[in-house]
Length: 572
Image (cartoon, rainbow, N blue to C red):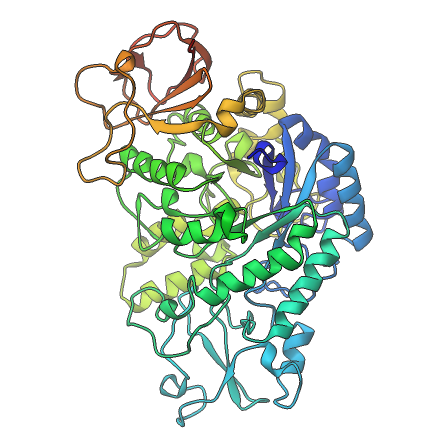
């Protein structure tokens, strides 16, 4: 079924790092307004705005103090309303970040909840200790551990009890067994939808409902997760929000999921479920990682294709992304940001923009921004990175190895300011930026690329225009081409190409190839994830090259290092 949110490109803005307008070193809403023409020129049709609500910033805005206001460091409600209006003039819609698993501990609800006699007490999850010394590990209500490598129970002296926080101690979890909490959330949704917001990106949306507070299975990662991930109560909450609020507006939702598998994800976003419209999963960004994204291992392109194939064919509709505010820069992750920076950045753009689903581009991705070049932990702002380093230190992991792993996984890789120009501070601010700026901004920046027809930026614009012109690239079926699946891989048994396109010989491990087809159109995408020439064991008749990152016009059976080619065949 066709929908407007399936056809538009979503551009994620992490406001504090996007554009500063007043010299305080923090990006703001007026700064975003000043760059709307650039986003329109790129081809963005939706902006996903990371949190701009008042926040103490224990987790950079994902600890919300007031859901119906704008943090003064970002601007005012009048600025927000102007952003909605100005974006609308350019046919750009806006979705907000919805963070409702937890609030800030400075939220009015939580402050009132600290009084055991308050009607807000049950807005959060409070429990007595086990009878030991308050605050001691043996006294805590259960053995759960959190997502920031942390304890999850914080003792509150004013209450004489513990409250649950799966993330930072300043992010207490809401209690969704309380119907009043759900009604509060409905009011928040209506507040923003009535202002013209077109939907929500829903933070950690599959862990809202805690079925039990029993001890969890012992785990090196997150103990207790079996008691709150993908619970039936969670599905009931999402269905209620959809039925009572979201279905009454022309909007959509995309949910960030925790440790999602395909079966659980389908329950969240299959159309007949009436919950979310699509979800973000992480498996495709963890094929070269151990323990989620934290410890690197060797990257295998065929494993990436296995995972992409599983999700492309398994979900009714995908949210397609390679970067966001929590992930490494994709050209540093899966590309070659040293020897083939430009070409590999373009190859990854081809991969993302030829997959089936709604495409999400993160700020700076369109100019090929790379991971940070910080030299020590002291330069990082990310609470998760600091906690990870502390945990590894307790495990006696050497400092050089801890820093290597933190650099590869830190969320600050994507949070350095957008590199707008070669001017001081990359044109981001006239003051001192809230976090360091990558020193390569003099070489990688928007202004220089805007003038260069062969730049990464202008390649993104071409790709987006191509995608918008083709229903096949938006809605067409996905199937892998060739025989790149490894024995026992998750993609075994997927569709193979027609006999006319099959070649001979072994399939190169660094070659990713797949098809998109609809009606009489068939696009074949071929990507060489290596610095070597690769022979493609496929043959074509009457196919035309519609785009490549080397500007080739004639097809041969070889791809250059980090080359991407898209062919179009029209069948009768």
